[in-house]
Image (cartoon, rainbow, N blue to C red; front, side, top):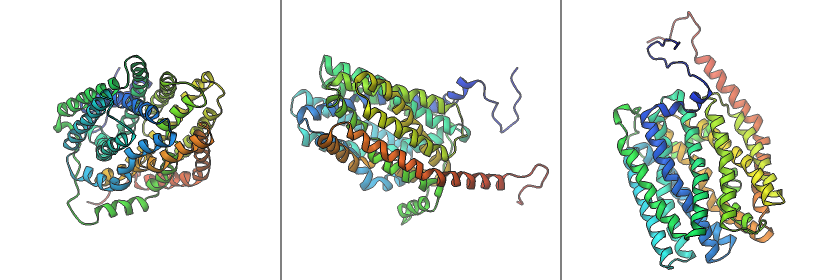
Length: 435
């Protein structure tokens, strides 16, 4: 028998599977989820193809790090401004522009690769152009989610979005590795261009009337600085951002580290890299579904614990003596990565004001991905000079240390947040706030 509901309240959630997938019952989010899931399959195929293309052209770990970092340079240069754009303007219109333009760059990669008219400098230039689009796409895409689902389903929606990315990584890496081995790199770029159609169609099919309205800030001077001050003065935002900056720069460099380990320590090629990426993504899917079923119960202290566990898993991957052991460890690396990613993203989404959310998520993207400008070349250089396994060590060790150092501060932030919630919760039978 279904429990009755009262106006303004949602029905009690069913079993664990229902909780895991609860946000997919919202039509607009369901369109968003499937559209981006298809598109991200193509994105991971292109990511794999780009790494192998650079290694084929130069064989240099440093070149791979530079090419990867070029895509994230715009996050450092214009990241906060891109977040302000996401706050000011219609997010769907902005996404139409970024997604269609990204499809055009994928077409260029496909044509130039097919004609053998591409070299490392051109890869870097096109990666930089792709980064300019991504820096505006990310905050618009991340901050669109709260406009599609009610607040009580935000954690579920954010986590399912991360799950879809990692499911797409499994499929994209497996299919991409097979395509490279069978027909070459060009097919990966071409199919990525086609995949953007799915997300553009999904955006067009959303019902505006069913979206949560958000007040857009008026045009004023100093709004980027206001966003930075807001984050600096809000511990619930600043502490996760510090952790993200370090781990994003050193630990989350798998487009650089996995190809290096596949070629160097494991003496493999495209198939080895594809298998490694797929196993890591498989663990991320399992971890994401686990987190998605918990609702909004996570606290900031869990972020530090996730960082410690993730770092330990990365160190275990660095020490794996064979491909079989590597494939056994990488699911735990994926589990830790999505736990850390989802917990940080959800914490910052929930702690930020709606009018600041675009700028906050731009800083999230800047910390998580933009630091690759430094981390990509650095990790690539370490792997080249000291051995491919060290490219993982330089990420795993700081993740463990930072998690241990930040755990007390994040737990204090949790206690302060709970105290604020208790203070704002009216006592049963007491009069409400004066009007």
